[in-house]
Length: 220
Length: 134
Image 1 (cartoon, each protein chain N blue to C red):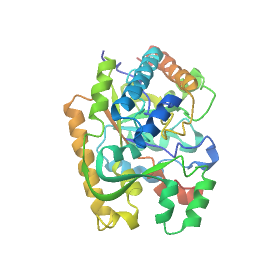
Image 2: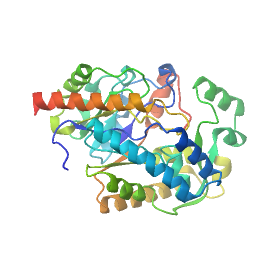
Image 3: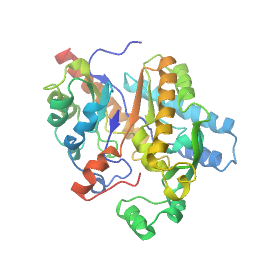
């Protein structure tokens, strides 16, 4: 089905996770359930999310990112040289602990709710980041589909944790070259597989220019 | 490419505020087809800022706030899109949510029922706009 020529409707990516999905995600991360079992739960959730978007009449559909810990931390599942860490775990490695804790409090962000994709070694794609998501989504709908990927700036900002990353890279710039290469490879794979729309998420770009003005910041 | 001002809290006052003006030099240099931007919250500023500088690309116009429990009226979504029509052709204009509904797995900013109704409102607005502007 072709998308309309004007006012194309879509959404930006993630969908609320069900209790079953959250339980499976935690189980998979703790290795108490298999990848196969995890995928079975995720695929059921994705199926429901696609049906809801079709029911609503959306033109370009997404998979709801059910498999993902978050829109960027999920790459630890796919990229070698990374480790998923809660912000609480990262506390040991940040330079000013009390400032970091205070920031999380004022930002209404419990340290346990957010996990960071920390770089702890040389980065390379262990498997495609989202190509499998595209293939599965294609089995569920004839509508055009959108795949979301974290942007290079967001990843560079969040993955660099000096005390841990300096063992692999001299500076954030050197690490960023590998991040860009990985994202570029993924984009080409998605294009070649016929993906209709690839969206790069760069939420922290705003922080660079706005945090000084409005006196707030983000934790990513 | 999607830019927003944070999507982890339902407390609007902890999220970033400001328009896209200071990002324009960076956005202008990016070789992307579409900017997917927040506009459902007043914290995002006026459409004019981006409309005047980036109307050679498509705009994914954020028309519903994923973090609120009330569904935006269709008329309000249509009005928002009409503001953008001052700078963009209908075929350049996408209608979307401001951000996802659950960026952080264990901290969804909404529930499925409301998310679904917000999508329905976007679709209904698009139908009104297509009837009016083609």
